[in-house]
Image (cartoon, rainbow, N blue to C red; front, top):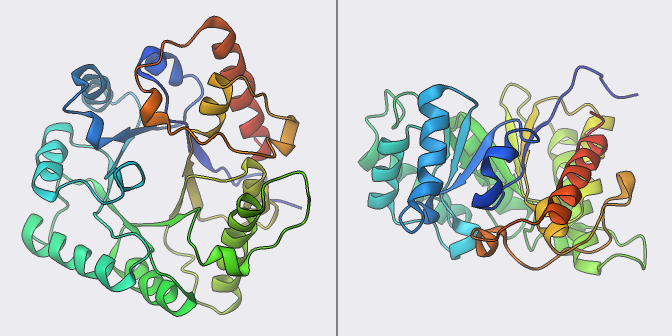
Length: 282
């Protein structure tokens, strides 16, 4: 039995053409900082949300899109302008030590260690590493230092620990899906998981992954972001109820940011986002 009180909040990144409509299916807004300069209207949308206190705004350092975190000086400038409710501190893909160093550098050079940059914004620390020991080291650090702990969907570590259970879905997608579940389960089993800290899940491979966390009442997983149902809708794929999809469109939402969503695509979006909440037992 799952705890009916448990609610995982969700945000699906969306093209500029439907940002206003995205407020109907998102619990909070998720912004990619690297798009602010090139798309002023994109920035203004999130700025108005913050100024009007319409809904919380989480600012991402765009590492997934860029391959490395957004340049720190420019990141600071956008944080100061936007004043988001949360922001992801710069991290380094698959490197525990470099991510910890990036956190320390951020705290030393860009905050005064007594208040968060952005007038009280919560700092999200991302867990990074290539193996169990690295990931645990980074997890222990972030769970002691950050306001919020983030765990990604696509660590290469999962490719060694995940499980393939069906021939209908891609092998790597299944490994990532079950790999994150197993990683979190092992953190709990070994007494490493911090129940007193909120956790955020970055992205997804297969949407059906998330029912596991509700079924097992991992109640401090508070939020997830994924553009999966949006990109799928634009590519004319509809979720199969709580099964979701057995594949993942390779296009990143950032590459579709200027896409003009058609009526048919928006119908798909409303359906897929509804099914995603059903997966979350909402």
